[in-house]
Image (cartoon, rainbow, N blue to C red; front, side, top):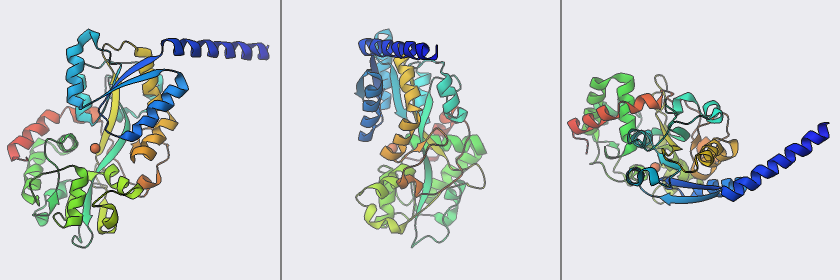
Length: 338
Ligand code: FE
């Protein structure tokens, strides 16, 4: 009896596999800019027989394109970085709510949209870097970055950068708009230079001597441990780092994630792909391939990112933080943060 059941189950699995190969396609619109994501796609194709077609571009352009394509859009999935962009996609109406027990149970609730329109798959922490030779007492919290003691020392990106937009929205969430505005004013007053460049450039500024304190996402620094990053790797010993706000809300987490397109022609494959991204193997790949923290608890870290040490992450709901993005934008404008 047991044997017969096993044979039958085997036949069924084969039938499903054949079916998937016959009709399996998945169209992904992605704004993740990492070559290493290739492995994620090819592993999924090998495991499922589903062919992935990919369109890459700037997140806002992809969202606009999905909107313009309307019901005829071939997009099944949108993958992007930062909560602010995931929220913009939701607000633009290009995503849909989905039901998935796998995603509900694997992805922590605070890394999901409250309507299940997007799910986070990897995280990075936005932390403080500093010149070990110049700064004896680095800022221990985000609020401390506005302390007049650091006047002229701080390098941080433009307010047009989504990572900063979400960071400020989280400060609004934790401390209120008034305190957040004072904070932004203080940071502008402490800037070593007008905002310029990407996260890596803020750390390069420490090496070049332009900046004593820099704000950047962890994966840019971890990358300089894993491989040679010009302007950082050779002088890494000079750069200290700390996870801010460890006695209060915890270190701010920046999210990368995705959701199913509102008119997805291959909705089942789309859900299957998102569930695959939450699997142990894909989660480990986010860490090994791009120095990110897996969203799913219990998945091991690559050595480059484990080297940064343990810390307390801010586990405020990013769906709630997203509600303060308009307030954050207003504050940036008001205080003249370029
Ligand atoms: Fe980035």
